Length: 313
Length: 313
Image (spheres, rainbow over the protein chains, first blue to last red):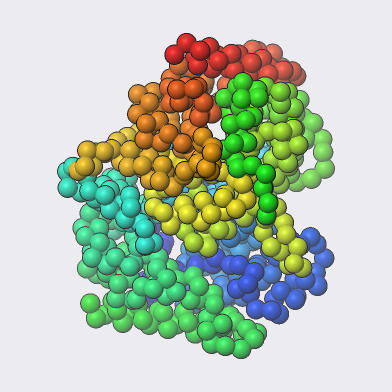
């Protein structure tokens, strides 16, 4: 397979082109959708899960269309699609296809962790193609990148690294998460003085080095935005990692915290917002007929907030 | 929801009834299937992924049928089904349905890890039902249990525990895995002298206590069989956990190692074998026309091997 550019370079360039390190999180639930989308889906033929997935696909596509010149990348949380079985899987596949056509870089937030041939199956499932009967190949999702959990060590990461290298894809490995209880395991202190999450960060830095001549590795790190001091320290440990930073907006983190882990040139991070972008229409009030326009207004506000934070730090 | 019995009791009783702590792992790939199943699927109508999923469903169902009076439970590795997209999801759903009808307890090996509403979505996706348009509910998979990764701490586990408690379901949390590099993170020594995996074991023991009057918790632990001394020590830390023990057969562990973590009454463990059971027909030689009978012969051999190891330790 010949690939023009590695994932990290593609993502870095697209962030630079839009001057916006935002990541649109599409983690849809039926109760997030305005009534008119549900009614439209209900009038269609098909099973109840098919109708539900159709409503979610409409929701995703309208938001993707409205934000395409503002936001460089989109992250789909796998759980919300898995909850609708085969229909949900097809919805995710079509959402990814539409996002690609509009120029977004795409990440599936799956937090997978497995070894050997199982890890390879996940690569095919989320990033690549599967061989199918008749000698054809089938693309189940075809995302640009996925999230991983490194608890299993190198065996649970290297099959993904190999696949990403060969196919120009990327991954983001959990280092320090943003949830309140993250520290129960991640903050434990090792006998050498490091915290568990710092040991994980050191592993990630070892797993992911940039292509010669490039700034960033296609092996990134998930680093929670609610812990800015940790983010600054982790940047020292992982100079070549792009940080995927959750926790902006509805989860509570502000722009100044979110950009704390960016490098000295204001690069190397992408800040996720899910509910604040998906549910902007609820915050604005009204029936949600113009939900995608509300998401666009919020995406512009978030972009400008991040630009300001990067300019003033 | 009213549930007659908790998951741990159901599993423990079924293991006792068949006097066999084996777990059938169904992690199918097309190249594991005998040629006649592929040819049968090729002759069907449908897309290439649909045909591939149909061949895998046939393979699963024949093995499940052949082992139903020997093996108490089945574990499906999610990755292999995800690799065929929506068709793979439907194949997993139908395999689970068939396994339930035959009396197997079912585990989806998904190693999920996420928080809050995302964790709840995974519960619906793998164990329960989703609400769909029209007010109906839909069962995407409906498994009895799933595997989890506890790196996120309590926030990443408690939504699953709540769901399991209310619905009579179970989970198995990764503590010490059996892969060669598992120790890179899991064996690091903490300043209090514990290893990281022991700290995880202590968390799991805290998360999962048995229902009053019962021996085992429905919150189990994944404990690699290639490390028997660790398994014995972990049994002390986790007296109420059922251990899911990978690594028997093709992955290298023997029966004596596999049962090391069982309690003093020879209970509290279930030993997985995937390739050695699925691919028994290849080991025996021949065309694979009687692949399910070969799996049965191997399942009986494994059962007797585990019985012997439990009797002689």
